[in-house]
Amino acid sequence: MREVAIVGAKTTEFGELWERSLRDIVVEAGIGAIEDAGISGKEIDAMYVGNMSGGRFVEQEHLGALIADYSGLARGLHVPSTRVEAACASGGLALRQAIQAVASGYSNVAIAAGAEKMTDISSSGATDALSAAADREWEGIQGATFPGIYAMIAKLHMAKYGTTSEQLAAVAVKNHENGMHNPIAQFKSKITIDQVLKSIMVSDPLHILDCSPVSDGAAAVVVVPAEDALKYTDKPIYVKASAQASDTIALHDRRDITTLDASVVAGKRAYEMAGLTPKDINFVEVHDCFTIAEICAIEDLGFAEKGKGGLVSLNGETKLGGRIPVNPSGGLKSCGHPVGATGVKQAVEAVTQLRGDAGKRQVDGAKYGMTHNVGGSGATAVVHIFSNER
Ligand SMILES: CC(=O)SCCNC(=O)CCNC(=O)[C@H](O)C(C)(C)COP(=O)(O)OP(=O)(O)OC[C@H]1O[C@@H](n2cnc3c(N)ncnc32)[C@H](O)[C@@H]1OP(=O)(O)O
Image (cartoon, rainbow, N blue to C red):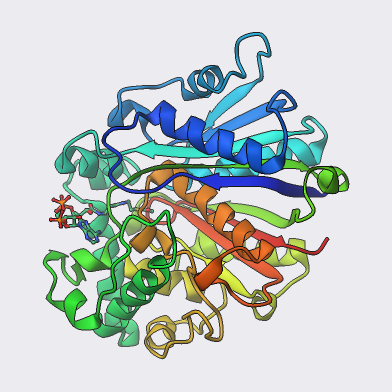
C-alpha cells in the first residue's frame, strides 16, 4: 500500500445557490482543486463523486459520467468516474475511494468531489428525501424525520447523562462563531445561547438553531502518491489514516442510541492506522448535523468522557484556542450541509488548517487534523487523519 497525499483542494460557497446547477458547482470545485494542485486536469486518471440523492433533489442520476463530461474528462480522455453514495457520508466515502485507488497503485492522480443541490425542491420534499438515509420501512414511512431521530438521541442523552439544552446550544454558538471567519459559510452571524433556546422548536429538544440547514455546495480534492506530492506543491497534506465502519441502520436496533458505534470503531481504526491517540490530534471537524451529534461525536472519538460532551462544550474546551478545537470551519451548523459535499469539505478545511491558511479561524501550530463524516443516524462513519508532516 502506498502512502497518499492531498495536493489540491477547493470548496464552493455553501448556501442557497438558486442560480447555479449541480453540475456547475461540482465543476467549480473540481477546477479549483485542479488549479490548486497546479495541474491541467489531463493527469487525472480516476474520479469519485460523492452525492446522496441527485435523483430526489435535482432528478439527475448517473452523476459519475455526467460530472466527468462537464469537467472535460469524459470525451477523448474517458477518465473512469464513479458516483459514491452513503447518505450524508457520501463525500467522506468518495474521498476514501480516491485514497484507496491511489494507495493501491491503480491510480496516480485521483480527484474526489462531493456535491449536493438541495434547495431546488420544497422543504418538505428535502425532509422526505433525507429520511431515505434512515430505515425507510421502519422510520421514514412512519414519519420519522432526521430532526426527530436526532431529537430521540438528545432526549436519551439528557436522561442518562444530565445533558442540558444550554449545553446543546453552546455547540451551535461556538460553530457560528467559527463560521463567521469562513468565507464559504452559509450563516456568518453570531448567535447567543439565549437566541438558540428561544428559536422555534423543530423536534423537542432541538430548536431550529440546533439544526444544520438545507444547503447547496460542492468540494473537491486532488489525491496523489505521497512520494510524488512535492512535485505538485510545497505544502502537501499527508493522509495518515482512512477508516470506515458500518452499523445497523435503524435506531431501534442500536445497542445504545447515545453512542454511534460506527464512529467509535472508525475512530479506533483511524488512530491505530496513524499510530496516534486523541491527545495527538490538534483539531477535529465532526459531523454536527445537529448539536447533539457533535456532543456524541466528541465522546465517540475520545475527546470527551462518555456523557461529558455537553459539559466540555459549555466549558469552552472545544472552542478555537481551547483544549481540542472542534469544527474550526463552523461545521455543518454554520457552513451548511449539502449532504454529499460535507465529507469532502471537511477534508478541504483540514488541508487549509494544516497548510496554515485558515486566517482568523486558524488552529495555531496544527500538525494533526481529523475529519468525521456520518451517514444517517450512524449506519456509516468515515474518519480520516491528516498531517502536514510525512
Ligand atoms: C447524518 C445527517 O447528516 S442527518 C442531517 C441531514 N440534514 C437535515 O436533516 C437538515 C435539517 N434541517 C432542516 O430540515 C431545516 O433546516 C429545518 C427544518 C431546521 C428548517 O427548515 P424550514 O422550517 O423549512 O426553514 P426555512 O427554509 O423556511 O427558513 C426559515 C428561516 O430560517 C433560517 N434557517 C433555516 N434553517 C436554519 C438552520 N438550520 N439554522 C439557522 N437558520 C436556519 C432560514 O435561513 C430562514 O431565514 P430567513 O427567514 O431570514 O430567510
